[in-house]
Image (cartoon, rainbow, N blue to C red; front, side, top):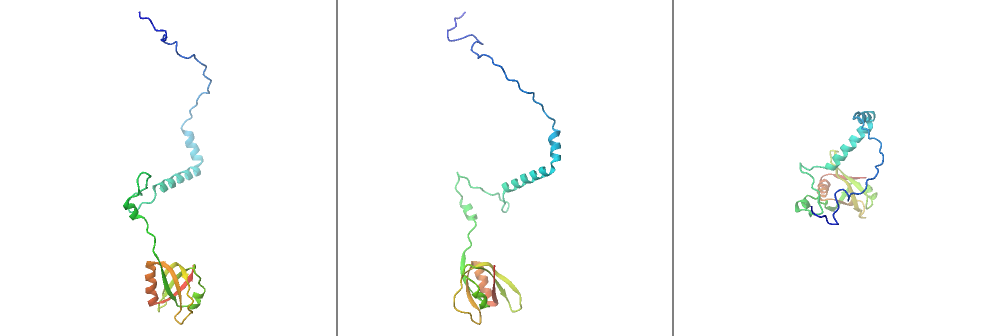
Length: 176
């Protein structure tokens, strides 16, 4: 038989000594009916929790545009050229001088006020031409028979509507 080297020990002698295991209470498994009973007792809570989960899922899904999924930018990828084209462009604001039929109304206005511009035709029909536009200036040229001048900051599309309405009907303003 081969001689064992002094560093090799026989099997089982290199294990640590045993220790006592503390006593644990027995684990009791309840039946699956108890959570169902609790859920039936607290229906309002269950309904509220279900609505909260549904709302969270809808918010996480986000809006969909024309069947396309929302693209989220990642730190690893820079925004693409297509994403920059899809960004909402700022509305270009222009200043538009507008003659208001009632000069006394214009004297009530100050720069910074928000007004709605209403066009009234000869038949008495009135329509709002520009809503919530900002007054930038009220020139002190005095009221005339044809009204008074006010300068408004409006989107470019509304400036065209204002010019057309000013040529064909009488304009009035209402403070917002």
